[in-house]
Length: 389
Image (tube, rainbow, N blue to C red; front, side):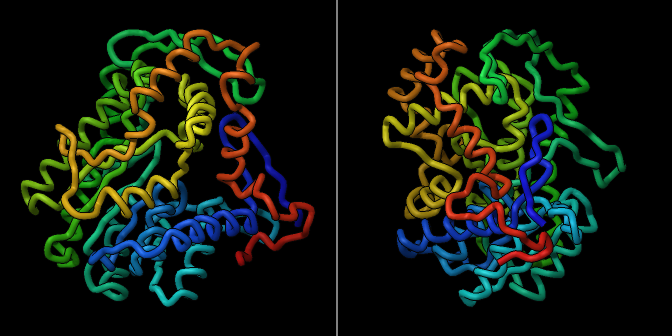
C-alpha cells in the first residue's frame, strides 16, 4: 500500500515504516560520527523507549556506550492494510540495527503503568541482562490506571489558581490569536500529579529492587521540561508544574532509600512532540524557539540533547542545580536566547509570524515524528506496513 499522512486535530493517525527507519538510522549516525561515550553502565532499561527522548536514550546508550537494553512502550501493531504506530516502527528499526551491531535489544510493548508489564519486564531483564545499572524514565501519557485500586486518572494541562490569557497558534492555519484557559479544579490538579508525577517511577524502582535486578550503585534518570517564563502560566505554574514538583519529591525519596546516585530529574529543552502540540501557547513558543536557536547556531533535537547529556553532563562530577536536577536546557534558557524570544513574543502576530518564527520547520518536525517529510524517502512507493527495514 501507499501510506500517506492523515492528520486529525493534533495527531497524525498514520506512520511510514521506511520514514521511521530512516529517522532511526540518522539518529544512530549522529552518535556514531561523534565517537564513543565512556560509560560503565552497560545494562539499560528505558521506560518509554519508542519516540523522542526515550528512543534517543536507547540509541545513545547502545551506539555510544555499547550498552544492551530492554525497552518498554505502548504501541499499535500493523495490519495487512493498516500502518502501525510510529513508535512500533521505531522499535523494530532500532532492534534490527542494535542486533546487527552485536547488542542485545528486547522490547516489551504494553501499559508500563501496570503491574503485569512490570513483571514481564523483570523477567526480560533476568533473561537478557541479569541486572540493570541504568534506568531511564521517559513515559509520556495523558492517562494512568493506578494498579493499586484500578482507578483511571486523566491529566489536565491547565493553569492553577486563576485563568490565563495568552497568545497561541493554530499550526494548521498559521493564525496567531489569544486564548483564555480556565484554571484546573483541585481534582484535575491531583489527577495530573497521579498521571505525570513521580509515583510510577517509585513503583518501578521498588519492583526492580524487590526482584533483585537492580545493580549496586544503579542510577535512574527521569526526564522533565521546566520551560521559559513565556510558557510558565500554562506549564510550570499550572497543573504540570505540580506534577513536576512531585518528580523532585520522588527523586529525593528514591535517593534516601538507594543512595545519592539512584535518582535524578533531568531538565531537557522544548522539542516538537505530539503531546506538546495540543497544549495552548506551547506550539507558538516552539515555532519561535526553532527560529531563534537556528539563528544562534544552537538548534537541538532529542538525539542532540541526549547525546550531550551522556557525552558531557554525565561525565566526571555531575553538576546539579539547587533542586538536585541535571540541566540540559541551559542553551534554551540562556539569558541571550530568552531575551530574544521575549522581544519577539511581545510583537508577534499573524502578519509577522513568517519573519519572527518558523512554522514550516515546526510542521516538518511534527511530520517527521511519524516518518513523513523525511528526505530521501520515496513516499509514492508501495510498502508493506508490517515490514521494517
